[in-house]
Length: 194
Image (tube, rainbow, N blue to C red; front, side, top):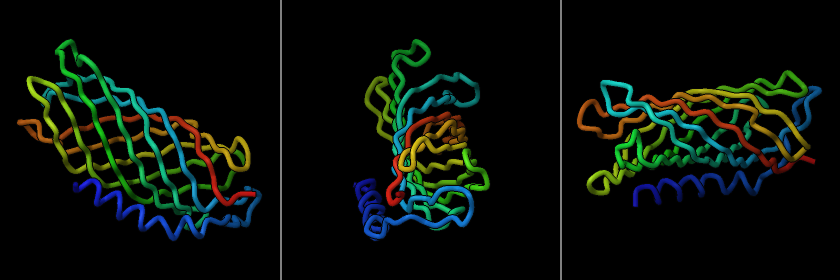
């Protein structure tokens, strides 16, 4: 129920942005920037468990991003990610991680072809585990990272690579902390670009 409220508030806050979806003139050789961008990404997620030792494992998944470009440099980003792994380290344990994060992005648009960016996001994390019984946990989540995008066509962009450190505080009966790495790539569609 808490997640539904967060998503409803995010959608209500985004509604005026959608209705005002026009291009932002950049004032340089770079093309106009769409006010709104929507992305779909593939994610490789490297997680650590159990705590106190690596016991590391990998998950595959996807994410969706909603980007509202306030200026050529500053954007507000919502990132919703799901990743899943079966039979983690031959334990019979299946894990699904769901992160919903929101925050600012700073982009450097000095180049015609490539746009590097950095972002910091806060939000929540949820983990579903089927070990002995189904465990459904919610907790605080934090992401710091960045990447590089490029333009394929005026309305179509490509996230060449994005690398993030994802910190969560999902209860684990030891220290309630996870420090994970996420590598992403994907496609972005830009609204308001001619």
